[in-house]
Each structure stands twice: as C-alpha cells, then as structure tokens.
Length: 265
Image 1 (tube, rainbow, N blue to C red):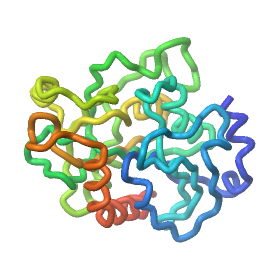
Image 2 (cartoon, rainbow, N blue to C red):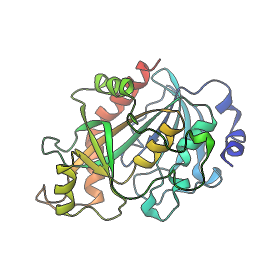
Image 3 (cartoon, one colour):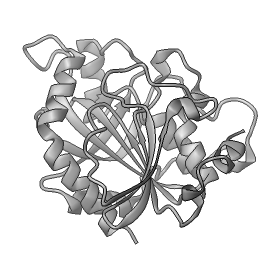
C-alpha cells in the first residue's frame, strides 16, 4: 500500500534524491530551521497513517532543504500506546524506504536512567533494550524488509553515531530502553533497566529502528534526556516536564541536527 502512497505524494518528493529522513519525537517538532521548504502535508493526507494524539507532535510531513541536504521530516510520530497497530508506528520508515531514502535519524524524549545524564543531555543511541515482547517484524515475512531473521548486532550505524557525537557539544553515547507505555516505569523497573545497561528509557524509536535497519536503511537515533526516571528524582513525572525540558534544549537540538545533516555524504 505504501508504494502507492509514495507514488501519490507531490512531485517535489521525486524531483531530487532525499538524503535523509527524520522522525521527530516529543519536543523535537520545532528544532528544524530549513533553508527551503518544498512541500508540507498533514498526516490526514497520508492514507493509513492517522494523526498523532500526543501533545508536542505536530502531525505533518515536511520536505525541505536543511543543512544543505534534501530531507523528509515526519514532525510527530505514532506510538504503540495510542492503540494503533505497529504498521502505523513504523509507517514513516516504510514510506521513506519506498521513496528510496538511504538513511534515517530518529529522535525522542527520554527519561534518564544513567545518573550522570542530567535533564537536557543529548544522547546518541548506540544500542537498545527491547524487553516488551513487541516486535514490528512479527507476522508474515515481508521480503522488502530483508531476511526473516535479521541481525541486530548493529542497528544503529556506527559511522552515523560517530557523526552525531561530533556534530554537537557534549553529546553522550548510551543504550535506549524501550517501554510500551503510556504509564511511566516504576522505580523497580528503572533499577532493573539500569542494571541491564540502559542509560535512558522511552516509549518509541525501537520499532522504527528495527524495521529501518532490517530493510537496509542506515539508522541513527538521538534522545533528549528530559527528566530523571522514576525513583531517581524528587518530583513526580509528567509530560509537561518532558516538553519544558525539550524547550530549554531546543537551540542545542537544532544546531546538532543541522550539523549532522551537513556532515552526511
């Protein structure tokens, strides 16, 4: 179906190669400072996707020049906890594949598991923990998504991860733990994830990363740590806190994304 959706997009999407796709998580929707905007589509125009129901997710597909590169950006994502199926969650990376986009940068807001990661820390994802039992490759095998049993040794492209670290000031490296949500984790779960090697925890990114990597796209991922995870801070957790921390970090987030794109071949 998404081949047909890709074919029906405005012709601007096919006029020149798209170097990278972006999937923007909570608080990331306002970090883009494009040199030119070529096309703008609400998610309602994308058959089978549907609008995000979460504050901080704008819900539009943008085609732009950013960092001197032609980029397709999904401003807002769908989450499994919204009640949608995994096909909607991974829809952006599947549409990018159909458009022939070779690389994707996934972004998110995350809770800090690593006590050294203060709110506002930007973390390049080197690996992930998925203990949820949720895998977007479940079901009939789709050959366009690569082999039936894909190797996940290097989901996050090492060269792109290195580029992320070089592109910003004090960008940390770490392991992202995937939680289904929408409730935040308990203190006991936070202790367990930290003991297993997690540095940040959130409710997105991993399904998209698995499909993109399996289908042959180069994957990079970037977290903005917005708060200490449950049991590590004094205050109750809230989505408002997430958005506020993202707002404070936006200048650094914007500079990092633009520098990363400039560094892409």
